[in-house]
Length: 258
Image 1 (cartoon, rainbow, N blue to C red):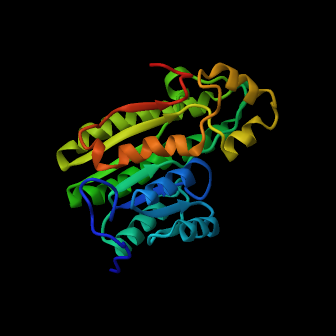
Image 2: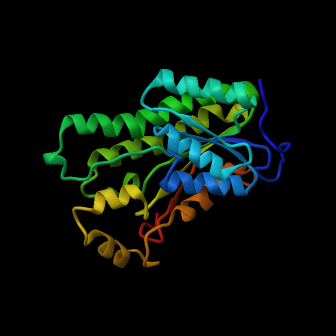
């Protein structure tokens, strides 16, 4: 086992802590990883695109590494977990961020699309959580932050199956929090509203008026930037949130107020 972390663990911030962030080579995931490193963490950039993951890790520094992983492939997820444990000997934080969607009316959607959306957004979170949290139980500590969506809380036209998956993620987070609390592990969900990411650009390409309409509907009059979500995740990942578990935090510029 080779410990590549550069700092000892600090009880007040993320210095010395090892954090896995899935889907971290771009978009919200990269924003989260960047913020966690700024707080002193070493980040495992886990992404389907292994080359991009390694490039992002090199950019982040602080001993961060890139790992290619398909979160829908359980053996691949378990291999990632083993690699991280072999390299660092610990996993302090898991951020389940990897996600995908294809927008369109539910009645026009295809079952093959449902399968992919469910596999990435729901099964991916389940696979990574079970694989990593088993290690956290042995450690006697750990933090899970699941990236949900406000689509889970209020629905989102054109995202029926995605909304269902994220609703499942929110409910799963609460149950996981109850089951693992006795092991010193917390689990919370951060739910973004509309965010200015490559995925949003892909979704809105066929509807150029979508961005303008959303900006008018959001009280703060802009889409979320990756750093807006990263700030919330960094808090949930840090020791400052040690007494918060099973909670859901919306980061939506006031679009949803629950």
